[in-house]
Amino acid sequence: MHFCTSILVLSPMFLGAPQMPHYKKKGSVSGLHFTNQDCAIRDNNGKIYLKFPHFHGDYLPIGYVSGSLKEVRVRPYYSDFLVICVYETESTEPLPENGNVCGIDFGISNIVALVSNTQKCMRYKGGALKAQNQWYNKQRLYYQSIAMQGHEAKEAKQPGVLNTRRMEQLNRKRNQFFHDALHKIASDVVKFCLENDIRAIVLGKNKNWKQNCNLGHHNNQIFVQMPIATLSYCIKYKAEENGLFVMEQEESYTPKASLVDGDKIPVVGDQEKPSFSGKRVSGRLYCTKEQMLINADLNGAGNILRKAYPTAFEGITDYHFLNKMIVKKYNTMYSRNG
Image (tube, rainbow, N blue to C red; front, top):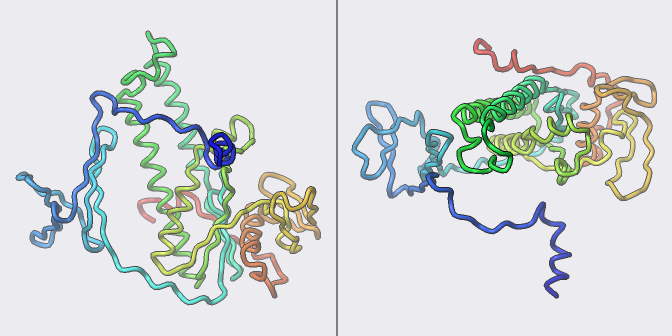
């Protein structure tokens, strides 16, 4: 294939032009890798410690061991260092299929909407994540304006100009909040599936959904900064650790089709103007052909499931269970007492 032709053919596969590699910035730090021949796990009176080579100080307490130590990675983490222990564990045998499946639609107001063919459904509110992100953007803009005093705009990329201690603390707080929240949501989703004997999970996904979103400036900022892919990955690996089957499903037209009326759901591009029985009457509600109002995100989640498993809702005629969902909020789900 001619070089220029290959560039034209392959360019849609990438999100941007490749950049030349650079040296690390002066004064920056790098990570280290240790094998299990270098580091070792030590047990001292019931307390588990990690021993580094040629280190004669106190051992590093690691709390617990989840398998056979294979590797230790040390990464720069803001002003500290993060020690990552990699363990080898036995793979979990997948649970046998029983026909119980659920679909998950990711969003903003509802970070997760889950519908199963066991007639159980649940929503996780995303208000706390949105509020944290908005506060972060506001604070970051404020501290950026202070840091740029006495500097020209072109100096913003220079090392140390915007990398202040306060900005570093702000970034760390925001990222740790999201890391904690996403892992807890993912764990709760898997717990819900196990409690209701759901053996398969279908995750909604659109290729390059953040690159192609057109929701307006404000909504674009909220959506692009929501780590949906991270949450999807957390659900996937936690579910597979518990023997559940997980798959991803392209979700075009799932918000527009009617779950209750069983509309056919095409793939984008298959037909020019598909028509559907119901319609979305507001940001939160979907109206079916028979004028039944249901949560729009749950309608989308059910259609994602139906797109992957066309017979998932076979035999179900009463869809009022969609209005009896469990709603999880941040202040109740993550309270210290709960």
